[in-house]
Length: 135
Image (cartoon, rainbow, N blue to C red; front, side):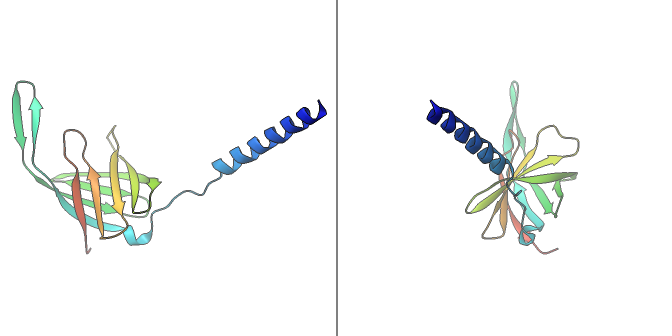
């Protein structure tokens, strides 16, 4: 009986220590080498508006990533917002961007090699790949 009580206390202590260490992880930050401007094009696509299909032309996109903010320019529409690192994989980093005036967030994947990123388009926009340019 004493042994069971002793084991319960140790199990509770182990669970508390594990919970605290899991919460106390360091936040993931984006390295300086990934800051800068990226340019690309959102491909043309068809938009279903009830009874008709509307062709949407390709449009230029420019994304500028700084230490604590992101600017996205699609055609003549400019958006500003903040980002945080959602996930860091072996070959890429996923950013979750919250843009001012938008309910849905933007998702940007920064690849470790090749100086390129991809932007997951909001439905029905297709995803687009962007290359880093010199400022």
